[in-house]
Length: 266
Image (cartoon, rainbow, N blue to C red; front, side, top):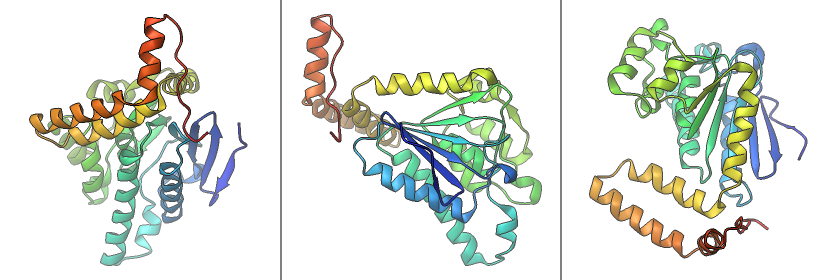
C-alpha cells in the first residue's frame, strides 16, 4: 500500500493493490468543484486511463459532505460567458472521463451530494452511500437550471423523476436514491467503509481483461439500437474469448479450482 499523497492539495490519491482511491479534499467548502480540483481530477483520470495496473477506482470525499457542486464564489468572481462555457466544458470532460475510464469507478458517498456533486455520483459506474446521505440538483434555487447535471442524472433515473428533481430542487434520501437507480447500494453509515472495500475486493478478484472489455462494451451499447448493440456485444465476446484469462477460467471451472488471472502491467 502506498501512502496517501496530495495532488494539488485539493485531491488526495492512494494506491492499494490495483485500486486507486481519489479523495476530494475541500472539507470546509463541502468539496465544491473548484477549477483546481477539476484539473487535479482530470489529470489523475488521464493518468489512470493509461495505467494497465489499475483495476478499480474509488471516488471519496473528506468531511461531512460528499460534494456540493461547483464553487459558486469562484463562478461569481468571473462573470464572463466564455469563462462559464470553459468551466462547464471542463467539468463535462471530467464526468465523461469517469464513464470512459477502462476500469470500474465507485462513488463512496457520505452526507450531501448536490448539483455537480450529484452529477459526479451519477457519472460513476457504481455508487454506495451511507444511509444519511442526501441528493439534489439544486441550481434552480439560485435561478440556474442544472443542465449539465441533468445529462448524467437522466441516464440513471427515469425522465419524470429526474425532471422533478431539477425543477423543484427537492432532496431525496439514500434509500430513495437507491430505489430510483442513482445508487447501487445503501448501507448504515458505520458500514460504508466495509461495503466499499468489499465491492473493490470482488472486482479485484475478477479477470482484469474481462472487466475492461465489459465496461467499454456496456456504456457503448447503451447508445445503440438493439441490433447494433447485439452486433457489438457479440464481437466483444469473441475478442474476450481469445484472451488467456478465459481459457484459464474455463479450465479452472472444469477442474474445480480457483483461476489464476493474467496480471496487467507486470
